[in-house]
Image (cartoon, rainbow, N blue to C red; front, side):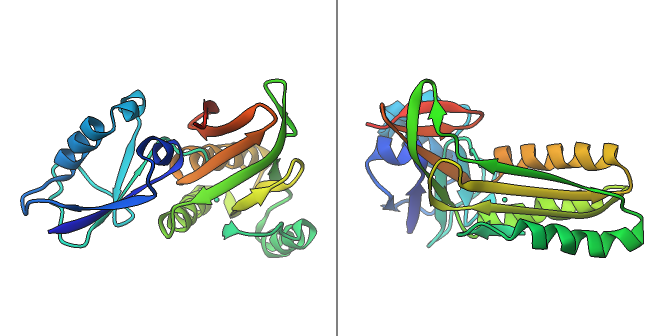
Length: 226
């Protein structure tokens, strides 16, 4: 049977491929595919403990029995959030909408986090930051985090937006808005939601700097491209 394997971020550089199709036996498991991957691309062993394997956009155990036509995404730790957007949002309009819908329910404030592209990293000038997302899983995961935040006691609204594409220093990258019954809840949930986006949503960053191009892996680790 045939399956499709897609590569992301630094693993794309290691394999030299965006994807490849494999002919595998009928009893081929995800664990066997992982073993094949690390034997075929030994440079990827540097990420072995953190590489993520998704089957058709979902988590699967190593015992999962692959099927004809399955798509397996292989990616390093994510660095990424409602949803993925190409352009900046109208923040004033978004805030007023949150206020109008939550003030009658008991909210007295909204916590807002706006991330933007840094112009300098490690002493080098950043010219551009390219964001790539694995869809539809990225959007589904962002929606899941939003729903989780809204389900918490004291939270009256939560919204998360993450941009994709090529962005310049100063361009907005992510928005997290949380309105709750008090500021302690709002600040705490906004922070937790942001951390979940950064660690769980398959969004990848390529930092184009004056000293070269770097993949941003996981919690800020940078791997020079090429």
